[in-house]
Length: 184
Image 1 (cartoon, rainbow, N blue to C red):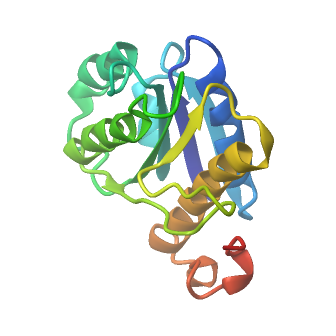
Image 2 (cartoon, one colour):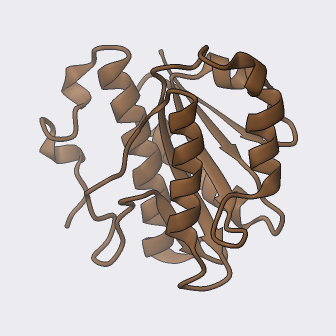
């Protein structure tokens, strides 16, 4: 059984809405169990439980939120080296385009890499204009096909990669299964 955790911080509720869409995408992969947790309720056991982790934060001055950083410093710090080799990706919201969402995703990925996660970006286009190269990014709340599609694609790809690399389910490899690739 594939295990995916969608861990997020959200003040306005926008990143929480993204988290639900990322989870929806992960659940589209057969035999995948998904947990969605805010940093306020998550524990180290949640991170230790998962095979793959989608990490989401609002963009705060171009980086991850202080609550997310505190979670990794204080909650996960004592579990250093216990999550080595898990698979991770990122997503972020901001108040407007140019607000630093991709930088925030890179800061989230940097935290994951420092804990030994194998991180990835997605080259596929979710829609004609949206691709999560550094992670899924959305202005304000995810509304419409473009914003919702990029979140679902990120979650699906996380579940596919964990199925392939952790559980040996090669039939779910996106390059070997063109039917699972979005139109682009």
